[in-house]
Image 1 (tube, rainbow, N blue to C red):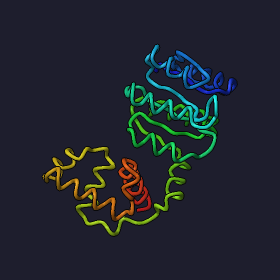
Image 2: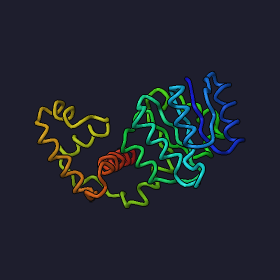
Image 3: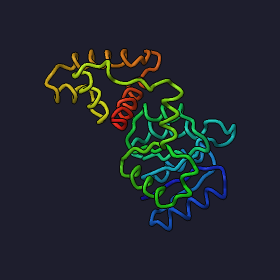
Length: 218
């Protein structure tokens, strides 16, 4: 793959470049801030961008904001976001845009070279990879440990299809019902899972995450 790296830490940036190059990838640019990242993406049109959450000038969320902009302007570019700590809010925001070709990994994971390169390959080919600690924190922070027992069989079917990334129309076609009926089922699911309207698109993402957690426990 052709890859752009964005991280303000020179040593980590150089280490990632060497690691990815040794694995057979082509690092077309390695930069230290969000502005340079956007320029590199525009110029090189890479397959994947590896991006640190916190970069200059404020070291808060410049990286993830740049990643969200890349996602909107160049959706074909896969994104692998690196973070020093669990920052579930950023993960939720990114997933809400589109979960495909997206990874969110704690930097500690890079030390396990084989696993990290596996994540790079998965995300670069359009897959989704969320660090288990990020997923756990999403549930802890938002008190999303409730079971799905309150859902009807049809609502569970709809939620399962949502977890497969199906659109409302695709769900309607699969279940041989109207799109309006699907919308009503989804609204009921979100209400029963206590996901308030203020969450916007994140409501759908959180519903899917809760479903996946339920399946894992089963």
